[in-house]
Length: 82
Image (cartoon, rainbow, N blue to C red; front, side):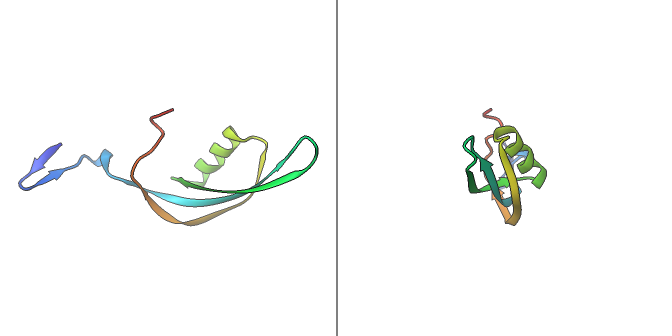
């Protein structure tokens, strides 16, 4: 990190990002025909990112409702861990 007089200058890539806090309500139909309803909360850069994540990770879940609850500041991300 570079220093500027009496403070450190953090590179832009190290700054926390603003993300949407999204509530997702979905239904999953089991093999026996029963339906399970679940609610999950995600921090994501867009609604499209949440939809893509759910479609890839849980293809049997039908998204019933997406609601933006607000914005959050993300301090770290797991995208580099995969």
